[in-house]
Image (cartoon, rainbow, N blue to C red):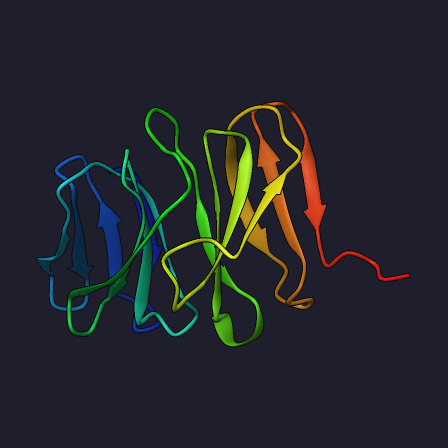
Length: 159
């Protein structure tokens, strides 16, 4: 297992080394394949409703999946992931944006409807492996890097 998330109804989703995410229902003691990818799943996260999964894949960037229909919605371009675990997150107003760390030391931000980043944040010197969107301040992102730093990102001040 590489990563676990729990849906609002208690079903546990687990990414494994076989490039898939499986669903485990402990109420009726059942399990099933939910998503199958062609590349290694490094990590994944769910939106607040538990209807979408944001999957970080080795050498393929980030994929957005609809969990109800079990379909790939979009592939996001830009971030690099090959050897290290990098996380992604939903955020912004109504979770209309995505953020991901990257092995190139940058933080990538996308509009959920666009495959190319709307912003690339440069400030770390090594792989950015953890990102988080502030749930109380939709314009604030935190990132942590292998360079030992944590950065807080927000809109620039206008003079």
